[in-house]
Length: 66
Image 1: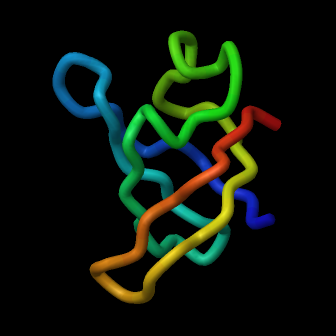
Image 2: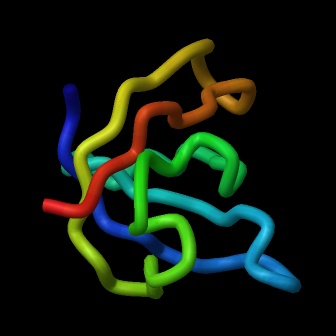
């Protein structure tokens, strides 16, 4: 698991961008947020996540609030 911060939430709360601890951006879809955090995750929240893919194709899965 990696740690990061929610950088932005995209329209209608269907996903967004996480910045990892090195500042790299990883996109996510709300379907990859675990549990009740799916509805309450906000910009600036610290999260734990797993990264799949690399570079501009990286996506975050199993996202949990810290």
